[in-house]
Image 1: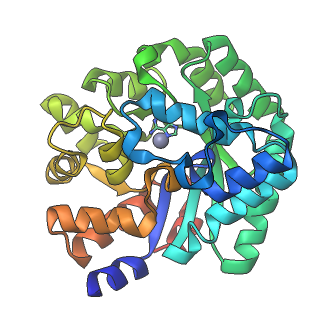
Image 2: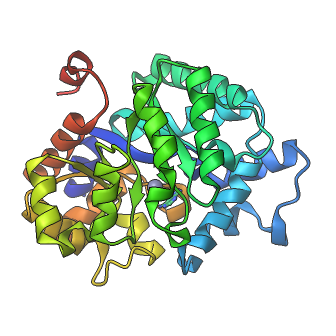
Length: 328
Ligand code: ADE
Ligand code: ZN
């Protein structure tokens, strides 16, 4: 229909998409066969990403671990990055993406292998479709503060132009974000940009991200609107919030009550700088077009409102002003 065509053609800038979370189920099954890995429970491509069954974040993270564990050599990383950026990105008119990597999600794989494979996939995707991309290395909050610090050291030792910054993801149930202050401080000293997930956490976690961890963006951040003073501050400072309507709604772990789209409406209406993305598209049965369509349907947004969200995403990138201007 018309909405579908308009939404599909809308230029998009993708700031919240995980590499492991953007692997197609058929690719996971292929790679498992290639590496002689038997997928737990004998699950096939058809029932691997049963998104209706994710009752909480941990259940979803277990599926993510299966996918991460079969992406092993540079060719695998090339393939996954390429597929995510072409069929999962350029085909939806995504012009630019900052991809989250999760090195701890690929046990035993050297950082260099991940980086080199993904960069080759990014180069080929750009050559074939024009999509541009950069990288964010996600620290795993289920791991120790020491492991996070060491990962930042590894990122710095293997400096690459594509790595624009770091993030913080996996389970928030493990505890508040301040545990990772040393890793974030080290990243800041090295000139890396910083963001962090705050999906289910209370508003004061968002203050911690800004004041202690030096974040200039917040991933999800739905509970910011529970605190008027913190909301006002984030409006004034134009802090971007990378929201994911479908994954956070299906996931049922964001604690967004009436639905994530209503949280997002509150955030937009409060004047916050909201961007839209898919998080882990195939794992939540979504894609870049579908997230905008879901929001348009739920909130009655038309082209003007949706274009404003893309304009926010352009401003929220970690590109320099020249590269940003090229996206406008
Ligand atoms: N890793 C991939 N998607 C995630 C999410 N929504 N929350 C935390 N960690 C993640
Ligand atoms: Zn995420």
